[in-house]
Image (cartoon, rainbow, N blue to C red; front, top):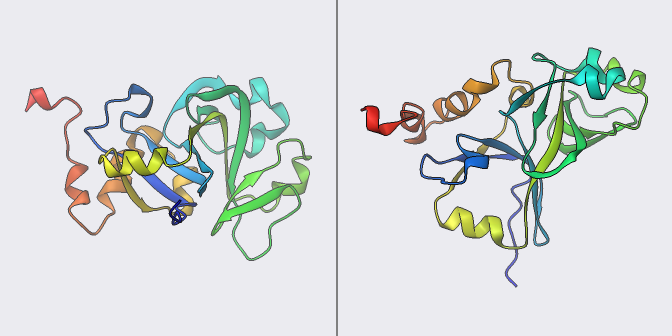
Amino acid sequence: MTEVSSLTGRLLVATPALADPNFDRAVVLLLDHDEQGSLGVVLNRPTPVDVRDILLPWAPLAGDPGVVFQGGPVALDSALGVAVIPGEEGPLGWRRVHGAIGLVDLEAPPELLAAALGGLRIFAGYSGWGPGQLEDELGDGAWYVVDSEPGDVSFPDPERLWRAVLRRQRSELAMVATYLDDPSLN
C-alpha cells in the first residue's frame, strides 16, 4: 500500500460537481486522515437544535449560532466538540488536531476549558471515509483541498462559509466562489 500524505487539519471543499446531497456546498474539516481512512466534520450544516437542548453545560461556550451542527451522515446520535484554543498548551479535556484547532472531551467539566476557548462548535455525527476512499474522491475531482484557519470552526454565518473559503484562495478557486447555486439560471 502506498503511503498516504496526511490531510489532517485541512479543509475539503465540495466542488460544484459533487453529486452527493450530504455534501452539497460542504466544507469539511478533516480531524484525522491516514492509511486507515479519514474522519471529519461538516462545518456549515447548522441544525435547528440548540446546544442547550442536548448539552446544557456546554451551551454558554458554544459560538453563535448556538446550535448543533450536522457533522456528517455517520453516527448522528453521537456528539463531537471542536474548539479553537490559541497558544502552545491546551487545557485538560482538549486534544490538538492541527494548529489551534482541537477536539473537546465533552465528558470533561466545561469549567476546565472555559477560560481558554476561542470558539466551540458541537457536531452531531461525522463524515467518514474508509481506506483509500477519500483519495479516490479526490482523484475524481469531488473536493478541493485547502488550508484551514481557526476562524473556520466558528464562522458566524455558516451558510456563507463555502463561498468565503473559496474566495480567500489565491488561485482560480477564488472564481469558483461565484458559481451559481443553480447554473440553469445563468
